[in-house]
Length: 329
Image (cartoon, helix red, strand yellow):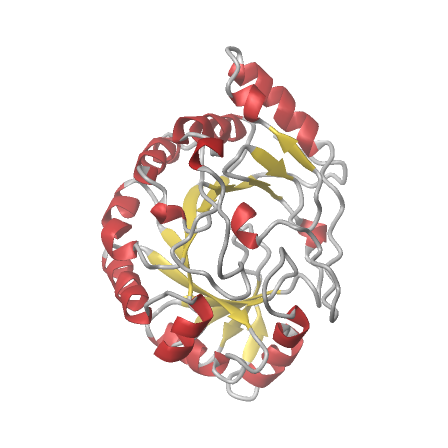
């Protein structure tokens, strides 16, 4: 079991398998992104080595992220191999976060390898706005992918980033759509990660205001539901479904943080909002990789900080220079 300096059990690993994405969402990355050379990425076998070591040290949940994880060539091999830890009871959950563009192609395979829940990013149901926000996404393709995932047996949670004056007044309708289709929903505050073309002050929307507005349409009751992530859930009385809120700025969720994040280049970030990291590249490629990784992981966890301090102000530099696509949120 991995315990950090503040006596928090670290049992959740988020793994970015690529920094590449077939979308260019405005709040996530620059329009003309420079992605890492493919030679700099860990191989899928190396990622599996690191994941298996974490599992042997007590990790119970692994979320595969990106970029867009499903654009990584042969990524289904990783899901298949990690899924074996589910069948023997060493891993409780294997899941992913996706933009939904590739779900039609991979939903059945994901289910067969043990994935039961997927988070899908949908920030608007307006086709023109969706195209503008993602710069190249196709809403119909995403919605078709979500439907195929549901048919395959996957439980869907919709992730929506709240953006002032953009989707601000659509959030209630997205919630109605999600719950009508039996999807849970989580609304997320935009985070100051990496340089983008827009001033995040213009984008930031406090979720306390969002929750207040939703409460005019629905009765919300605090829920004890917990998935191991940063969402704080409410029951929506009228629908019988849940809505989660991720509030890294208005309500720091660090006191219960049980997560660390592995990048596709082999760096482990112990905190989303800090630059401190541990590089596992040499360890995972050594002859005695199991021993080396155990030592490296334990040393990294011993440096996990108490929390982050995100600030969004006009002309204020991002909290960290790396884009969201590096660590996958």
